[in-house]
Image 1 (cartoon, rainbow, N blue to C red):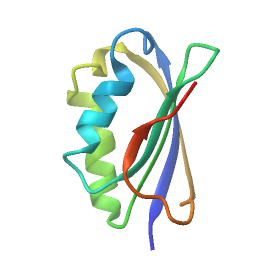
Image 2: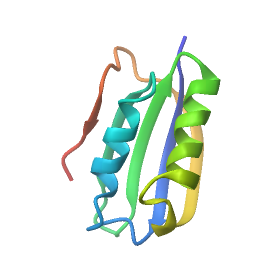
Image 3: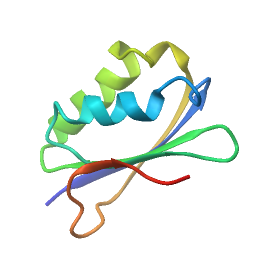
Length: 94
């Protein structure tokens, strides 16, 4: 069974390589999901993993230690059911 987080990032998170950084970072973890820009300037992320600690480590790395961490001003995070059949990690279309 997978655990999933639906997250909205606010700050200077568009036009700084945020989505590409998230995708690259996800490659180092056993997570699946997607990331996309929103028209209101936020970035939306859905990330899921079988291991809750793996998911937490990925999200902590993004928020605290990634190349784009300093652009994040606010994080709105919700635990949600993982979509069935979710595999891989991609940048979704805006």
